[in-house]
Length: 75
Figure 1: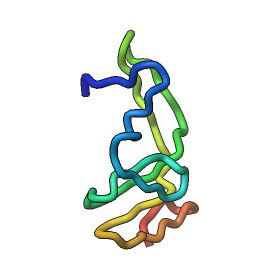
Figure 2 (figure 1 turned 45 degrees about the horizontal axis):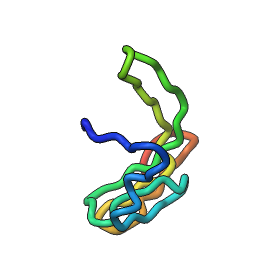
Figure 3 (figure 1 turned 90 degrees about the horizontal axis):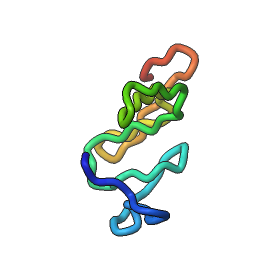
Figure 4 (figure 1 turned 180 degrees about the vertical axis):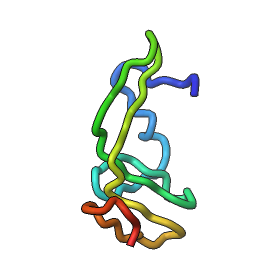
């Protein structure tokens, strides 16, 4: 996306959001959510970053999906 937050403005203030585990904003009308903890951030270029995350929460069709953190598989 070419849209960026300016100053201290939160881009999610204008829309309804909810959260699962980490408190990160999620849009309620989405079909599926993945809530992740950032494990690593890699600078790729001057304006590009790659984030690697550990999935800690999943919601699909309004139902929470159990995650087994030991095996990293869906239960």
